[in-house]
Length: 600
Ligand code: AGP
Image (cartoon, rainbow, N blue to C red):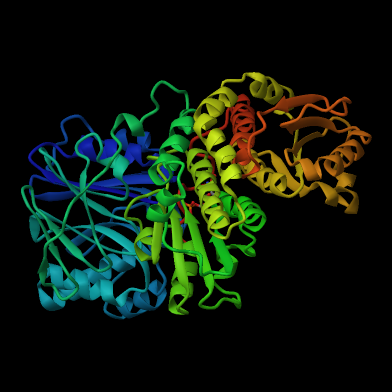
């Protein structure tokens, strides 16, 4: 996803913008650029590839108090210098995050008005459209608003105009953008890490609200161009929280934060009494059906939730990928709760699914990490996980915190329906109390790295499990795929004999999960099927078996089933990390991936 950073202040903004872009690298990009005003001129520098290539174009003596920077994750047009942002048309220069869906039709209209285009991007068309309205109205803010209202799709713009070299403008619709003030000057940014070195106070823009940013002031306008007042927010984390803290990669740091994250997330809602959940959660007891809708790892948390909620609250749960759900026929009604799960709160497909359910009058609940994100703001109810800033593209701590949130939800619903009794709640509370210590103990085990050293050169690695373990296999397999680029698939253990077992060759690693008592025996017989065909079996379990049908065994502590997933996932995260490290992959910024996919 693209990154935007802009600055207008009393100090040289170029280094601040570059630093801000570097803190947004985790979003994924393939080119970078900057535009700034000095000596009464707008200078644009941009280059394909990493930010380092852009820095090589900027000499020490370059100094500017007003500028806009951008990291581009290509959507329209190849990752080339011409397509990199900023783009310029007429009096305007801008950077953009999002997709203008009607840019072709707008481009045609503008070409008829003698605008010419050098890039393949929708962004250049947006810039020309603003200039077109400016040529007509000679009013910068009105031109930005009129053009924005004509664009369909998602956008966040940072804009400078030749006729007003003292002001930075910003406007958004759907794509994220924050406005921040610091002692050195004022910022715009796609996400909080870009400004944390300078301030943690920021403002959120609503759709089609416009910010006019001078060195000393920030003025907000609504879409009728009426001035509006806004309250600022304070980001709870700090710069250190958004840096590596001595770990080689953000992903490893974030895995190691999980004991704290889970403790904080649970403690924020639950003190061991159902009364605390009554206070924390909206009344969800009227719903007799739940749809959980998300993408990627967030979808996998829904698969875990299905197991918890169906088994402990006896409510049918349907888990769907958002990109399908948003277009399919949905069998929901006023007694259905639609739960949207999203770390970033900006994933386009998940946001679209939310909007579809709301349009149909269905109650929506969001489980989100990023405060003030679109999904968080538009859902009827929002439960924030306390995972802090997650920088690595491959989610770990946010995934685990979302799973923990679903555990709490299942406990709440199960108890309210009289299916979880006091004595079971006491057992669960004992495990919750010990959970941070057990997470720490599970993390601090070098066995997973040793096993990763044995399997990292394999071309195919399979995960198998039944029930809840299959849901965990799905996430373990995605972690491995997205950071190590090894082909990996998760199979329901019972499915192996229906075709997939033909893929097993000598020493093919099969990571087999078995943590549920009632399914253990069946899973073990599936493991033996794979083993007898030469598989190298890595057995992950909470109960050491008598016989040795495996090559390696990873044992985790056995805790209440509604919490067990939180421990089971940790070895899979760390194994994937070490496999990718052995393969010298770009662990925090895997190729082709973005931290949040705000395009369809
Ligand atoms: C997770 O490791 C992936 N990077 C990806 O699948 C992610 O979970 C998915 O894009 C959903 O993102 P969200 O939680 O921000 O909506």
